[in-house]
Image (cartoon, rainbow, N blue to C red; front, side):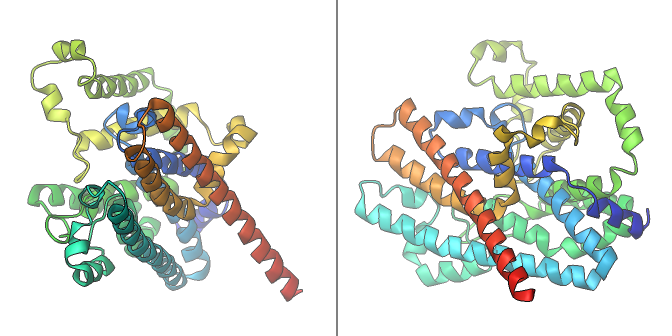
Length: 384
């Protein structure tokens, strides 16, 4: 595949499914970050082995590769690399601001409420005992306060995006093979990045990079094999296999809630597949996500009419402004958790804070989008 052809793919994509899926991932991450919340039983992780993080990383790899591959072909890999590193800096700055405010906010609330246990629950005990040291480790992405792990992972993956883009442009299959090899080696040799004060990253970047690269590979190479992919999707046996695996995954994750299912499972199967190893992304977790992707692209084509419906626009807008929405979601999930542990924790209250949080995320997305439009209008006016 030539770089010129890839540039055409990147420039002419306009696939609203990308923003839709990023929006869904942001909503699910927000709900998953609220403990003891009945609403988060509706998120992906309760219906199979993979979850919102898998979706966020895969679609993030797809979207960023589309953007920067086109830039690399049209303006050169050096220009694309500088823009990637500028984006990494923006993500890193957002992380630092989040980290400092988040830790200070939790410490403040814990000191003035009857809920001091949230300090250990949100994994910031080290900050209370050794504030400066923890802050320094936080600057190097080695501290791990709860709910910031996804942003840490994206920063690490984006830092290597110039290499990924260059590889996918010129040797896409070899790049994907190298990613698989790194994933397998990291799992066998137990590679991971260390964290402070002990342990490793919650999300091992040496393993999670596979989903990121797979998303980029599909973005650039998928259309080259579009006819072959459609032929595979038209194969009844493959459809049945993908659906059967999803049903199996749903059955296994439901075993804990439905004891009757446990008796139907073969001995040891549930123990082997659960938990689904989020840190190193177990192979059966990746297979589950690929089965979901296979059926989703079959059922929701890029020209699906409902993608432009008014009902889906709030989700799509949250996907378009994913960084601001993600940052807002981190604070909103903490606020929702605080409300639930300092007052009556009823189902109605859980539903109310979940709906209010999603509404606030939508408001943030529309405000950020509107603000960007005003900046663009000002720039155009000044230029003219």
